[in-house]
Image (cartoon, rainbow, N blue to C red; front, side):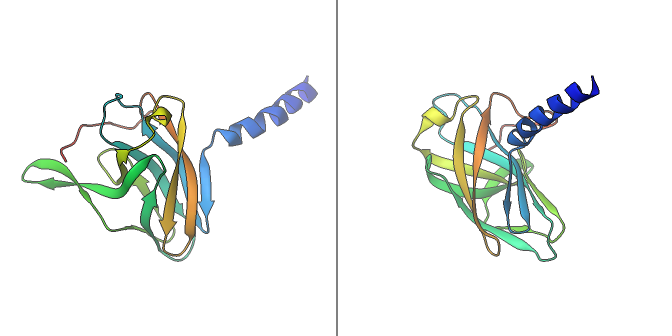
Length: 159
């Protein structure tokens, strides 16, 4: 019985890693890039992920791009006159030994002038290339999900 469990665990282990959705660029680890499925007429889509810097040196996310969008921007949410708004930022610092979370109502990637909407439905994936100051470029596959992952709050925001 124990041998069967060991064989089963060995067979399932690669599947666990395949679903982890983690990527590396130098000392940076990008975990679970995702986007929420939107109505077909939505003018923009956002992408989210967590960047962990296991190194001793800070890095910076300088820009992003994706073939599904004409424009890709780094954004953050800020409170202005009692109203939460999003605004573009020129870069996002990734502290040494720290994490930066891209999530609804926080930092996020906005994709505008959408070109290929066929990749924006539940279960599909689209590429997103991140350009870091020190760690170089890394392309991740963003998974489109019908709903946000458990524990993530999704809010509407003003542009």
